Length: 268
Image 1: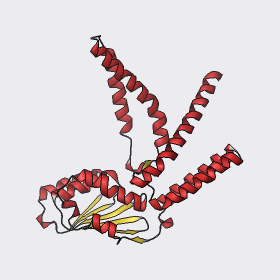
Image 2 (image 1 turned 120 degrees about the horizontal axis):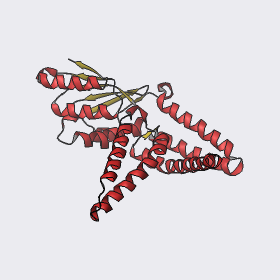
Image 3 (image 1 turned 135 degrees about the vertical axis):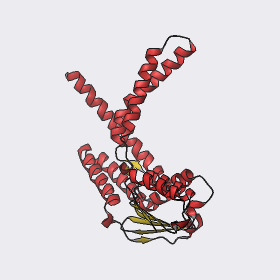
């Protein structure tokens, strides 16, 4: 029992070190690209590292047994159980776990990292762990407490070039998006939301709450974009203006999907 606890302690220590180094190395890239991180990353990696090892091992065995024509029904059965368990655990994921950092905080992270290295070299590991905990809590509070965010209004040329039919207003870390036809453009809604709009919002505001999205030129295309955005970010309300031209069937479909996401729909 003592040997098992000693091995578990060594495993956990090495895991935390690797996780910290990997996070520190990837965080600047994620911030620059506007990609949020999950606050459950540590727990997720700790759980799924063994599961991934089992999955890859079983997959390899199934592949080789298929090539060599060796009976492998039991291996396939184990692989299905592993896959179903994995999918079941992933289903508990939530977009509320995502934590984004705006680019303004990037310099602060570099300074904190340098101070942390000095503490490790000069003082001791205990002070380093305390320092990391304090900084982590500070960064999380910076992103989640609206009072710590400054009031901003968007009018930059950069935004106007990318989103010329989209106006974004921010106050106390709450976003209002006014759409004048940007969501109606002929392109993939998933690509626009996930690779243009969402990274831009993350880089600019960190983890914003979209308080209201107003559609002034609603259409089936704009509804698809809205649903994709609601599935990936925190949205409180959708307001549809000039809705007389929208078929009643599309209205009910949008209402039903938004109700499942606990998002309020206001039609005018």
